[in-house]
Image 1 (cartoon, rainbow, N blue to C red):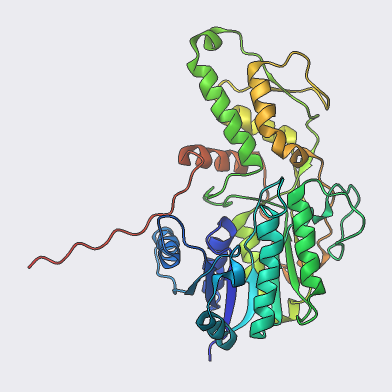
Image 2: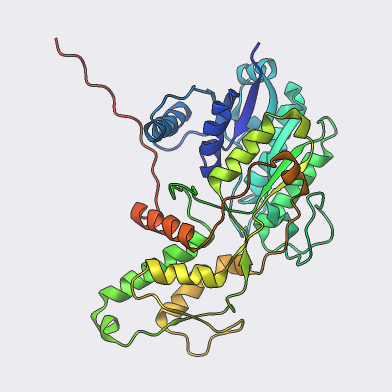
Length: 381
């Protein structure tokens, strides 16, 4: 019998890399996948794998696909699905999550995916006898802490910065409270950005949100003859430029998780998948000025702006949801990660890499659509 790893969230940015990297390590995968409006679960996975094969120039082994939905009762699984999982899966890698920062409805996001969805996956494990549980959380369960954050820390009285962080703390607590599991393995990446080599990404949050908004506003301003002919006025940023943000490329995060998954001696611990070299908001501002024509910024420090310009009003209105994102990040302890991955250093995220990522996102129009491979032409008679 082949033992499968049951993976959730396989069609997201990190998930698609996990499929590649775990498959390359000869891990048999079973995927819980929600159908989209235009594709079945099987079609979504086939489109994803076809994209990988085109990029890599080699075939990939197909996983076992199970149609599922974390928001439906019993995950939308029937008795046949659960019986297959019980007979074939010996571990779970729970990667599915909502990245919504604010939730006004406790029945909505991010609570529905991050808390209720985790509870549903745990119940599936209980029903099917799976005790080896791997969970992708976030380094930002630390909330607004400013001291050194240890990998063993979870609930230490910290104040969360937003509902996403609250929901991820609650999800981790559910996992640790599940007494039928073995000791869980928890992965806590910081802010995931695109591929360190290609710049590829399928989601555009955090740094990308600021890039996208600034790009859109400056494009609109440049198209306005009255604005374009005026003397350029720098956009005032209510930061001081020294704020540190911990950015990690998706390809490294995936490789790190996959490497730990295949080494049972490293299971049962929590891993900060973070960088020892955070990026300052000054570097991010410099990148925006380089990749966006006519974009100019000026740091003015925290506090309300006097007489904000039209661009400033629009920028801060749209970026309000990310207000907690721009705080100064704490230092993350990485003792467990260093012991498990001594030869896998984090790629340096610097000005040059952020420019490549920005150029790639702009070229993609900040949008990614999975497409099914073209059907072969029928043979001529």
